[in-house]
Length: 456
Image (cartoon, rainbow, N blue to C red):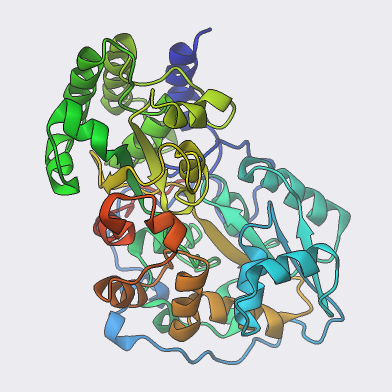
């Protein structure tokens, strides 16, 4: 089966997956957790709105002006004073830096090395060293074996498998957190962190806003656009995006693709969905999927999207380096990662030639939620780590600049962007005129709306 057929078949498969498929994320993951009584099997957060106001006060919207950085007392049901604070994640990209920030350090690389060698007293970091799609299996194994675990990460694709299981995640109010603590987070991250009953079990420190990064010189040559604003006007919806792709393909005799992969296109496209994948326990394979297939095929047939497989083909990043791919769908975490590789790195052949616009639809790609094991014996440390990463504005600001990270705090990011903050000189230097890419992505993240679309 060729790549196009595999990708289009995947659209249907993803929708039928028993995971927390919310429209975006790197991979689909199969659920292995047993259902619990805490979350009714036939209940999801994306069905029709209730006819009566929910009794749970966490459902009420919180005015950002009521933001509080003070956390309350830890519930007596949670243990404290354990010998080892054990944290887990699928890789070492974020957890060491978050621990460093919590402890008042910006030596992220140093903490990464020390944690890898068990050199930080009282803290053990379990690094699965796998893709995010494989982590749920690793966590289930830890729980099955009864291993020590305090705080761990969940990815959007399968988060609800754990968030809806009271034996694997604890409500954050038991750790002293109130809704006022999270008054400044972006709304879409808010939805994913709650279980089917509206109880907050997880919170993210990052907002993984996406955009379309493109070669500014090629865009001017083949599309006649000179600014990100002009580019956005050129590709502001999917019909226009396809038209632009065809124009580039025609102008280059098919030697330059407009977009990096069908996988990248799907990350953005899926975020434009306006109805949930599951309604009344029935999978909705509707016109949205057909629209994606039609747009994808138009780009595929004219060579406006590469034939490369996201992540698995060396040519995926290589096509940016050799100039046969003009644009990539990239989220905030990717600008210093795969997109930097696609530019050839600092000083590489294509370094410094790029620009970013919002793309055809506001979207996010990925993101990670911190959750706490109900069996934790270090509730105080868990509270402190989560507070530093998601509640303490000063620490979040320092983290955003030094990581760099698009943190999950609208007030912090608004302040930093208005100050034209350079979050990372190497990443910024990859863009024409040192474009403030976070400022562009800020517009996207404020428009993402998943209210009613999160389904178990």
